[in-house]
Structure formats: C-alpha cells, structure tokens
Amino acid sequence: MNTKIGKINIYGSVREIEMAKAILEQHLSAELFNENESKARIEIQKLMDEHNIKATILWDGNRVWSKKRILKDVKTLIKRGMQVLSDYLYEFFHLCCGSIAHYDKQGWISEYPDINVVRNFFIRNEFGESVLKWQPRWATDRIEIIKEIYQFLGIKEQT
Image 1 (tube, rainbow, N blue to C red):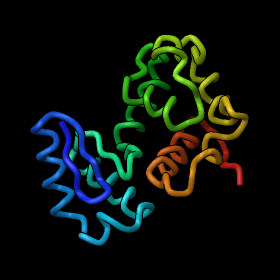
Image 2: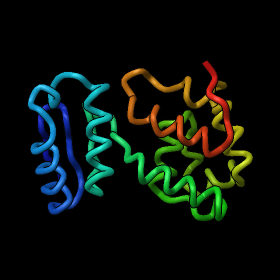
Image 3: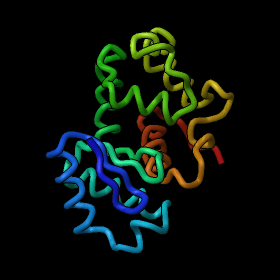
Image 4: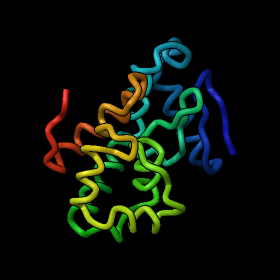
C-alpha cells in the first residue's frame, strides 16, 4: 500500500502509512513537500527518528533513511559480528554505499565477513571510491549517516 504527498511517497501497512502521513503533514511546511530536497531529506529523517516511523518514505523515488535505526544496527554489527546484519542495514549497504547485492544478505556477508572488511569497504567501495565521496549531493540523509559510521569505524573523512 502507498500514498503520495507532493514528491513524497509513503509505503507500508495502512497503519504505518497513516502515522507517517499525519506526522509529515503536521511538521513539514507545504513548500518543503515540493521544493528543497536536501533540506527535506534531513527534516524527514529527523521526524522518522523522533517518531519511530516504520513506513518506507521516498523523496522523488529515492528512499529516506532513519539515522537512528542505521546507527543502532551498525553498533550491533560492530559488537556482535556480521551474522546480526539486519535487513534494513543490508539494504542501506547495497543500495546506498556502492556495493552490489551479492545475490542476497548471506552473499553480502560472505563478501564482507567481518567488521574490518566492512571498514575497508567504507574506505574504498566496489566502485573504487570512499563511501562518503560516492554520495550525490542531494542525499543529505545518507551523508549524515555515513559520517557517523566513519566515526564508529575509526575512519577519517577524506576531503
């Protein structure tokens, strides 16, 4: 199921969609719904995290990611190992960080079996670039997440 508000599409269960739509309509200005993607992505991300929105939210076809959820999953991964890789974090890695899916989550884990290999991937992804530099400018939500992942992994930002 889905619903649309300007350039925003919301996917999920009826309950998840209704909750997300109500929160977005209450907190985002009408201009923001249709105009400034970079700013909107950060505002949507903050609302997702503050209100634990579980619905999938896309801006003009590109997913907005929960910073809180990704960082929690990365901390768990560092602490407990690759076998606890969540579906959400796996999607973030292969959709946003410069990696192919490697067939499925288990294939991705086989390619990146421990946190040191993941750290090296963030330094140089499958396209030969740092994950941070690989991000498009409009992906402000992803950029903020990746900067914090760099801190967790002990990687210095490359300018």
